[in-house]
Length: 283
Image 1 (cartoon, rainbow, N blue to C red):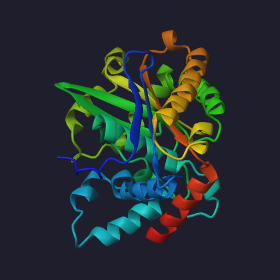
Image 2 (spheres, one colour):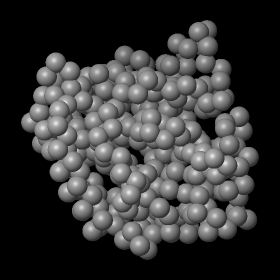
Image 3 (cartoon, one colour):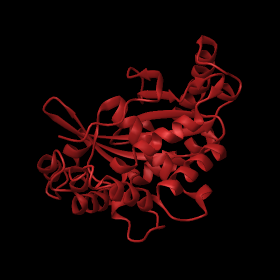
């Protein structure tokens, strides 16, 4: 059994599986007339151990080991004053969205496998699995933690083409396989799926690329409560991003299905500063 996650925080505004790609939009909401940015930062910290530690370490998480492991989890993310250039928090956002909406299970912790404290880990931004009855799906995430949603979509479109090429995927699967934790759920099934002798056709049939796009939202800034007016403004913004995504990404020629996640923000810089301050406290 994988550890029970923190209680849900993000509010689902849109979850439409009928379109291509399916889309989910979530927001932090409001409290006392203010966007819940600080509360969202607090919530992100609740996920640090699960995001940063290996499955074996999570199994050893007890009152006696909690403080040590929490400090380790915080230190693994990064230890640098150049926090505004880091993308790890965007990866945590996608981790949260996948866990909250689809009850996914991380296959590996990318952060755990850093070769130095402040290095960045190449490859997909999340490696999760989702059980659908007896079928296991591999979800390989891409994140664009940006201020400008349209710029994020333009950048991720080029990466999706490169990251779905056979050579790239074969190399990525080899690296993932080397990092699989033998005590993690679905280890045997996932190992067989990613084995070099398994046809990529089988992998593609059981895979999905979730893409998280953040952006600074006029609707978030122009509202002070989660009401129908706010929701309709967000839907209009998300529809515009969805249209740009469909125009930029060659959906019909990619071998793997996609899923788009949208997270509107008030001010990215303020949120990142709050997250960095909390991370330093935990460290």
